[in-house]
Image 1 (cartoon, rainbow, N blue to C red):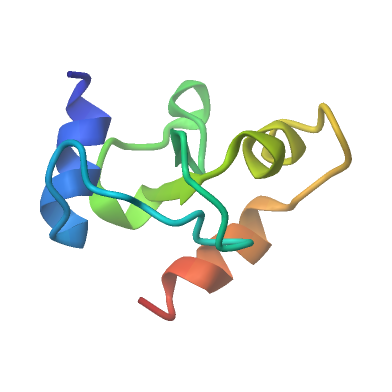
Image 2 (image 1 turned 60 degrees about the horizontal axis):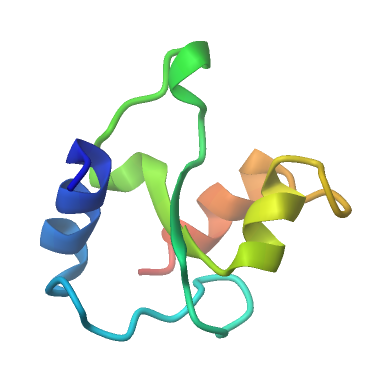
Length: 79
């Protein structure tokens, strides 16, 4: 398991195999996304991670629409 996934599970209180809801739309999360990309200096810390469904993850990468990093940070502040 990748480090960022372990950190997300620990920070969120989930265990491997738990249902994790997409933090944006409530669907089934399938990816743990780095809000600030590692290539841009982002970390593997929980505060920089968000669980997303496939559709929201693609939007976060600008593939099917666009979700700004700022809007994702806003969501994580409500945890």
